Length: 226
Image (cartoon, rainbow, N blue to C red; front, side, top):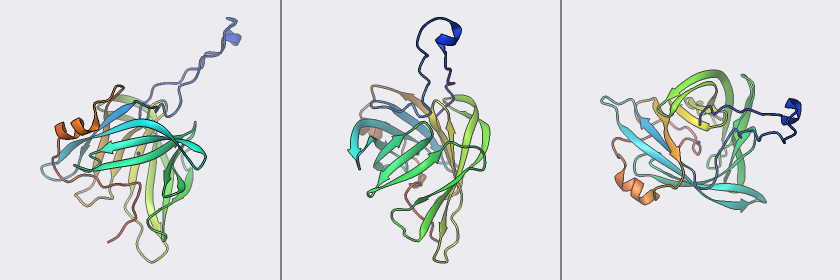
């Protein structure tokens, strides 16, 4: 695949209060029952706009590890995907086709790592933290966000893919993406619009959501072709 809810550790022992330290907010606060909505637009004239919805449904065990089962509607208008994600204090992983892929890693600017592309043995995903920056989305304004750049490198003579940028905020997770790897006029931009619990059933959301335009294409599972 969201904002700066700042992490505060209150160490009661240091303050002489005799209480246990307060728990820190995790980098990714996702859990079963959480839903998120993202506002998407492409660069057509006039621009196409639509809303994508994500719901974390339940937990599943895959390969001996616990993943959250994610359902997503309207990544491109009318689409539906199911994915399995796992989060640590520093990373976001997806279990895909029997392999665990690391899609985000918290690190200093210049941190680089790679991940496989399950449907293309000649492609490798290259990820890099390229900046720490302020970010403003419909959900709010946040500082010191992590800006990750991703592209696909090939070993069979094909050119590298265009870039895709994803922006993450500590305590909120994924909040924005800017995608130049599209089949519609780039960039396609997605921004966190809302989040909460007690989700509206996805089928009702799909019927009521905007289906204008041709959407962003699934970015985390593909390799670039001419």
